[in-house]
Each structure stands twice: as C-alpha cells, then as structure tokens.
Length: 185
Image (cartoon, rainbow, N blue to C red; front, top):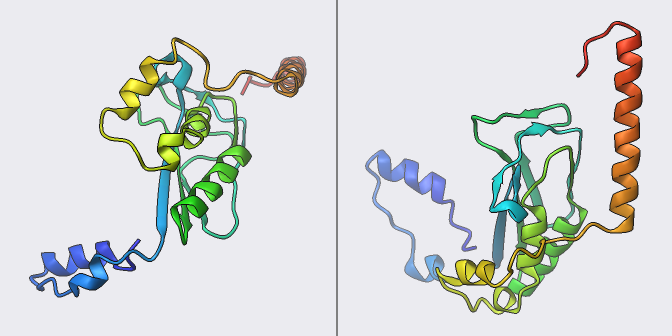
C-alpha cells in the first residue's frame, strides 16, 4: 500500500495527464493489503463451481477489514455465470498484522448453502511460506499436489450438528409450504 490512488491516475492518464508521482512516494509502502476472492467453488473437488442457494451469510468486519460482496441470503449462485460471492480485503501496518486480520476475518466468514473457497484460504494463510512471503508462481501448484485429496477443513461435530439442524428446518419449511399449497423456494 503506497497511498496512491491508482484508479484516479488511470483516469487522469487516459485524459492525457502526465504521471508525476514522486518515485519515493510510489516506492515507499505505508502498510500491507491482502485480498481473497470468495467464490462459490469446492476447493476439495478441484475448485469446481458450487451453484445453489445462499441460505445465510455472515461476514466479518472491524478495523482494516472490508468485504465487497455481490450476493445476499436468498441469492441463487447460477451454473452459467460468475460464482464470485465477495472480495475480502484486509489492511495492516505490517504484513503480519494484515495476515492476523485476514486469519480472523476468514475464521468469522460464514456462507450457508454453497461450498466456498473460504476453507482453502484458511489453510493457505496458515502456511509458513505465506507468512514469510517465500513463494513464487509455482508455489500453489506444488502445495496443492502434496495434499493427496486431504480436505482443506474436516467437518467438526459442531458443523455436523449445524448441518442436521439446517436439514431438519429446510424439510419442515418445505413440508409446511407444500401443505399450504405454496411453491418450494
């Protein structure tokens, strides 16, 4: 993060202005930002799309955390369109502060109804090479190859309880809608 508004400069340059940002400002970081794109994809199935109904959504907040989302509960993630749910961005004065905020934000992120890339990012931010910024363009392919099908996040007993409750509630609502002659949602 340098404090330079890149979009503003793109527009100014497109209008013929000269780029006159002092090099010391452009090359002096004032913090660190990290962005995760939250998609309705199943990381345990090779990041295949996970279309379906977003039944519930709870997003993190707080200082240095921003969630730019384009879906809300009740939104149907389609099969033939972009499966992006949100862009989660964090900022910190240092890289470790930004990673700490991102770790917390990812742990608080909840999307019910579709599988998401959140478990993948939770795994990634905990990798030592990520924390140390010791990676290159081949890093992720190499790391994914070593997982041998291991899930990014194994279900906990609490997850199983929540799934059972959600399934029971969905069945109850479906039955009561059918009894009332309403269409299933």
